[in-house]
Amino acid sequence: MSGAPLARLARRDEDYARLGLARGHVAPWEDGMRTSGGRGSYEWWYFDSHLEDGSSLVITFYTKWMLNPKGPEAPMVQVNLDRPGRPTEERFVHARPEEFSASTERCDVRVKDSYFRGDLHTYQIKVVADGLTVEVELVGQVPSWRPETGVTYFGAHDEHVFAWVPSIPQGSVTATISQSGAPPATLHGIGYHDHNWGDVSMAKLLNHWYWGRAQAGPYSVIAAYMYAEKEYGRTELPQILIAKGGQIVADDASKVRLTLEDVFRDAHSQKPVANRVIYDYTQDEGTRYRVTFERKETLLDQKFADTVSGVKHALAVLARVDGAYLRFSGTVTVEKYESGTRVETASDPGIWELMYLGHVE
Image (tube, rainbow, N blue to C red):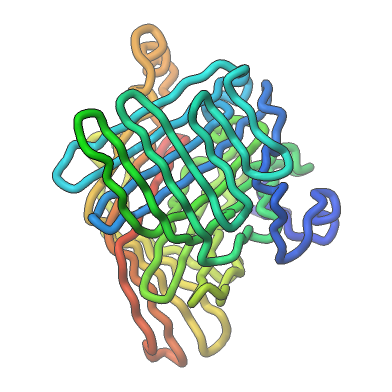
């Protein structure tokens, strides 16, 4: 497609000035509430972790469901807990607007008796939900980061926005999990926290994306590859962070190439899924990094139409709502090459996702 792209990562000097941001520095207020919470916006604060016994824990605090920004404020917390040898557990906490609060100065979000709060380095998260109580402390090991401003604009005149700030790209986790009828379990592991917001349904802007984060030996990785919808030129929007020993070594999205290998059609969602998602990052003529996400298990396979019932489900089917969300676990490998020779390699467990908002082309 000729001409300027209809979706772009905001990285110009005037973008920073308009948004009140500093290059290379994330301020605490950026993890505070960035929208009104009212009609025409959505926002969420996300946490995930891979724990020492093989468990994974994902917690998200929402001002409202991201696909319904035109709706009124509808605060919600979602918890997904996967423990080895046990069925996946999912819990939701729904609240009235008056049972929700969020600071604009820092991350300090409350939904009923649950909270998510922190200062870009240390976070406390607590969720009380139907026989399950989870308490988490997350302590940053890699500095807060964002790809340029963290804001992606859509439209010839920057009409719409989707924003993303990884407040804790990687941190140590202590999680205490209490379930009815069982003694509390305290587990340690590695975790991640980011913050997202926007002003129009993501399904109108983005067709699909792969996103993942992991620790592999001394390396920390966040990698994403988004595809804009047809209206926005099918623009490809890569984003990546590679850190080593807590120091960022690569984060220029323009140097990323994505390869999908061993792709199959998922039986439930009917979406194409890659068993291997590979990000190649060419730093300069001699240095190259390769990050490979290799799927071992599908943790969550959810069609959006199935999240509602009765008449709403029937209407969703009639409207051809076939969006889906899949979350995977497996092995993440980071390789470093110098002049074509592999000089480093490291692998560890990781979690990543495929979000399909639009129709498969």
